[in-house]
Image (cartoon, rainbow, N blue to C red; front, side, top):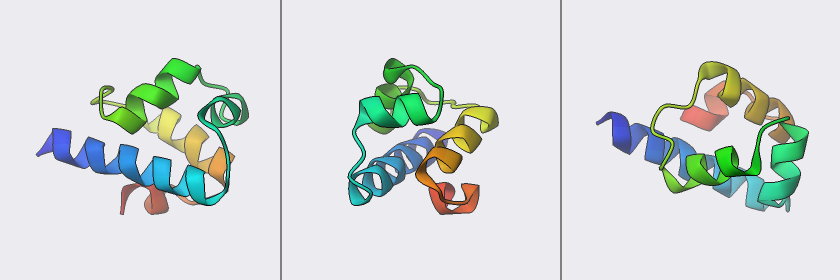
Length: 70
C-alpha cells in the first residue's frame, strides 16, 4: 500500500508540474532539490520522500501539501 501511495504522489507531482509547464530541471531548482530526487519521486523509485521534500515541492508548485497527496 505504501508503494501505491508514493507512486500516486509521484504521478500527482508530475501532473501538477506539467499543468504548470515546468520541467523537472526547473522544479528541482525551484524546490532546491536535486534533479535526481524529482525524477525518482515522479517515477515512484523514491518510495519514501520526506515531508520536508514534499513541502519544498509543494511550495515550488504553488500548491498545498494536501494537493500533492490527495
